[in-house]
Image (cartoon, rainbow, N blue to C red; front, side, top):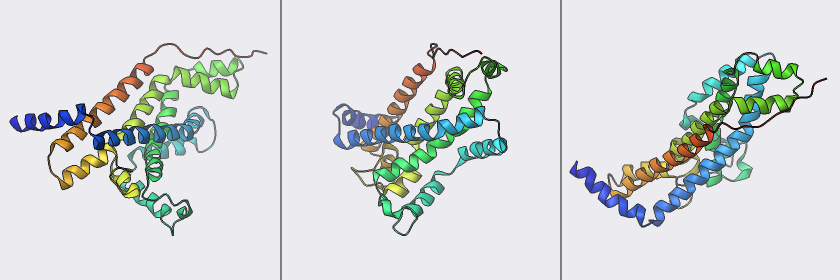
Amino acid sequence: MAYVWDQLRGAIPLITHGNPYIMNLLWVSIRVALISTSAALVIGLPIGLALGLGRFRGRRALQILANASLALPPVVVGIGLLLLLLPQGAFGSLQIEFSLQAVYVAQAILALPYIVALTPAAIQGLPPGLLAQARALGAGRIQLSLLALREAKIGLLAAVIAAVGATLSEVGAVVLVGGNFQGHDETLASALMEQFNYTGHDPVATAIAIVLLALILVLAAVLTLIQQRTDGIQLRFRTG
């Protein structure tokens, strides 16, 4: 217990005094979480809506693949993406390997399965007949999608919370594609791993761990408050 207290006694002043190294890690982590999750939403939400609302051949097989992608190993994503981004790779002309841009891409790929897999699950969990009734009342494709998003918002925001958590806590892909360069593309999670690997248990590592946990708690709390709001989008359907 004395050891834990000593670690906290050394870590707390680093946080309260705004240690530049830790503050930079915090800022990079927030940027990675927001940009990567936003990219995953832009790409994944239409796919999830199509899987949840669509009626086409092969939809069940695609849902199986989407669910399986939730177990996608981050290290495999990192290695695969790095091979594509190296100069001899398919996207080598972008020249973003070992950069923060590559970290954005990697974390967006890892966040994407949560949106693609959990969006149709949330939509399919709606009361039976709700969407069928909306179709019968003349709801178009966009109106139907907005209705589904409104009614399934608790499940959808749970997917967003999971995606944000993945972008904040994942390490393997960040280190592989970003290089984990201090002051550039190092995140709180990757820096924490580096600190424990090379410096052992010191106050800086403890401070990073505290800030990372606090950041996850704050973002989860904000998203949960949004999730629990009861108001929604009011829709009108054309009849006749």
